[in-house]
Image (cartoon, rainbow, N blue to C red; front, side, top):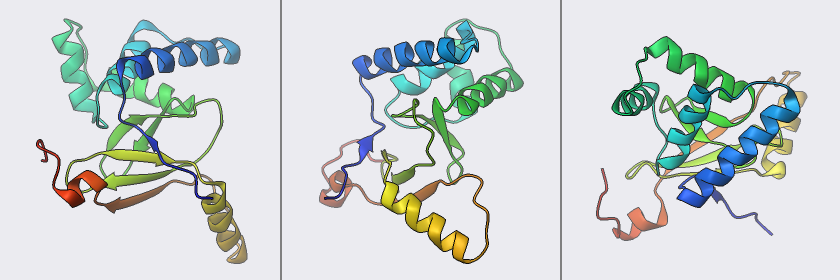
Length: 163
């Protein structure tokens, strides 16, 4: 049976749950989830699509916070190190991690038309890539797969805010 994708599209309850889980994980790991780091994570989770660093900075400024790109990038680096978010390199954006308590590379289905991203965590895909890399004597340091395509809504033309 194929595991169903985990949507990164979030709701307020997802955001609250993600923040609570982040606070617990950081406490268990002995690292600080500062107010800024927490707010950056909240911004990422409260938006329905992954965000770039400058878009996050714009939201922080709208909040009345002063900040510069290095400040946002440091917060993003921390969140990445803790496994609380993913960076989608092909789009240079950040998305909340649906399973921050388990280290994984992840596979992402990215809709070319609307930007929706679905995170999958398929051990079968990770194992296959690992085996193929090992057969080539290639040491895998991190594993992330980004697949560009069209989501079901865009295939049907049912999204009104495509773009």
